[in-house]
Length: 110
Length: 120
Image 1 (cartoon, each protein chain N blue to C red):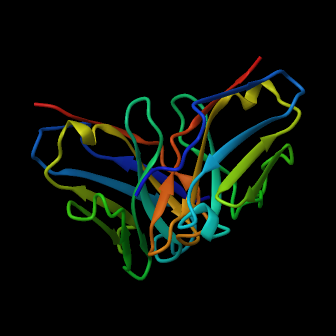
Image 2: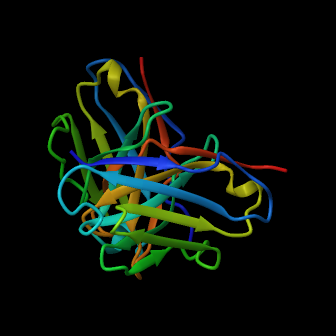
């Protein structure tokens, strides 16, 4: 199985919006509505910010939103803030009791 | 408040077995419910799912690691453990334990992480 494909980096200015993509196949992202997104600050454990493509766990700001089209899932961060600068990882259920992650995207807030 | 506290050696020799424990505390019937997993992150790279275990004892493993990994839970001690056999330098990573509702919806709570280096 191959990891999901994410751009290595993304950037946006404070207050703007940025979208990070996560591309898989019909066997994972495209086949199930079970894409999760995690935010990870340097030296810290990941934090779940999106589940089931577009559901935000309690306490996650509504500036974070998720979507999916075909084999590609996307995370959009609106109204960028300095504290949003972090690594973002996507994951997807891949069938047969298997989970795969993406390579991660480093988001820089300019 | 459920807390996940990881422990285990930070240095493992090549061909040896990596063993880590995740102690779960707080709340009633901690490891007896939920879905528990291990995820690792090699230096400078993305996350990699190692595998998971339901409170019932059912395990699921990453196919690429399945032949070398064992995940178990001791409900009497509220401990989750992972053992990875025949390690090489490629297994050097930060290892995390994590908690979720099931295999589908992600892990909503994570341990602090344990840096494990494989080196002689």
